[in-house]
Amino acid sequence: MDRSNSNKLHLEAENHLVGGVNSPVRAFKSVHGSPVYFQKASGAIVTDVDGNELVDFIQSWGPLIHGHANSQIIDAVALKMQNGTSFGAPHMGELELAKRVKQRFQFMDKVRFVSSGTEAVMSTVRLARGHTGRDLIIKFEGCYHGHVDSLMVSSGSGLATFGIASSPGIPKDTVATTLVAPLDDEEILEYLFSQHGSEIAAAVIEPLPANNGLLIQRKGFLSKLRDLCTANGALLIFDEVISGFRFEQGGYGGYVGIEPDITALGKVIGGGLPVGAYGARSEIMDKLSPIGPVYQAGTLSGNPLAMAAGIETLDMLSEESYQLLESLGSTLESAVNKVLEKHNFPMRIVRLGSLFWFSPGDGKPPNRADQIPSNAGVMFAKIHQGLLERGYMLAPSAYEIGFISTAHQEHHVLGMVSALDDVLENLE
Ligand SMILES: Cc1ncc(COP(=O)(O)O)c(C=O)c1O
Image 1 (tube, protein in one colour):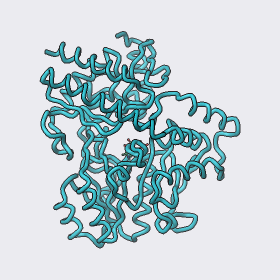
Image 2 (cartoon, rainbow, N blue to C red; image 1 turned 60 degrees about the horizontal axis):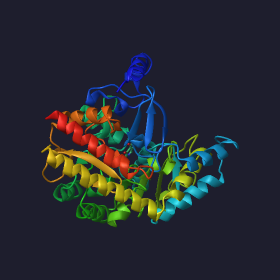
Image 3 (tube, helix red, strand yellow; image 1 turned 45 degrees about the horizontal axis):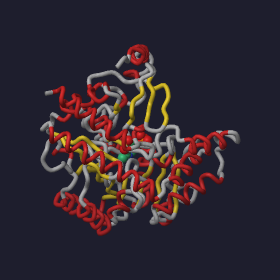
Image 4 (cartoon, rainbow, N blue to C red; image 1 turned 90 degrees about the vertical axis):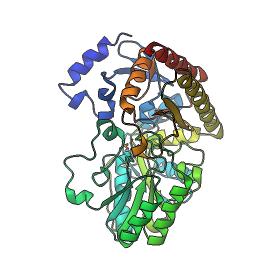
């Protein structure tokens, strides 16, 4: 497949943008290639600058649950745009999106919109600290919460790819208030709470960790965390930036029936425009300015274009949408696993709903970061390159997950599976 225009642009971009990209995971470093430059996209398909059409399983890293350039979303945004791109003042769109969020996250009395997932999680931590008057937070190994200073410890996402435990530029004092626990270990949780219970403001977790592979958590573990938080007067924060709206019940919390105190959202809620949000009971949310003392603000927060995209996206997420996503997901899971078995390739698909991950190894799927074999990157690079050559786009990292949208069709999924069959055939 000719990618000469992409390669030329990347060389030029390296002179102007750091590593040629604006977010590290977009670089193809860990799969030993260079990024594909997109020209346009529609539904499940992206067209690159060399005119190649690729079936896209990245979908902008999760926001595009209805696929690229969905006409209803585009029309809603275009219509709003005629009346102004940003007001910096209240408007109906904020109200309408907040109502829709509350329908799916019923424990929330109030919602605050921001402009990214990072901003949402960062604000939940400040709110929890302000609400409890405590400083310590617990985070979990392998969970990524955006580039929030206090949470950039043992994160996943680009950090997992590049093997960076933390980042320079974060003062020691900032992470000194962060306790790190492994996922799926109730004993360590009990120990941390027994030592620091009265100082812990909150435990922050991706209830469905999806930035360091897809590490599906047991309900029992999340339930233990819920109980320990409640017993110690700490808040439980679910970061559902990736998992939010991927389940008919709202997020993974709703799916397993565990209620946090605060939930952070992003990605799908903005339908492809920059939006994040967080919400909780009034008692907690009213600690926020302008009612309470905890300050958090944003010039473009709740802007009309982002709200319009979010409203349209959520309105289109019907029962049938989730049935379709589940059916495409289960087709992909069983067909890919058959092909991997056929070639005796030591990987399997881990999948929940429309989220999937090529998990290295052929035993029990990992549910903790330290269970992922260290050769994950090498194995994944082989299939990533082969699939790309055959027109199928997966995230360029062994630790990132794949996304199915309602715009995907069975032939896109099965096409990827036969391409994988061919890739593995030619590896042997
Ligand atoms: C679980 C989770 N939290 C937070 C973030 C940060 O969101 P954003 O990239 O919009 O700042 C991400 C992004 O991938 C995420 O997956």
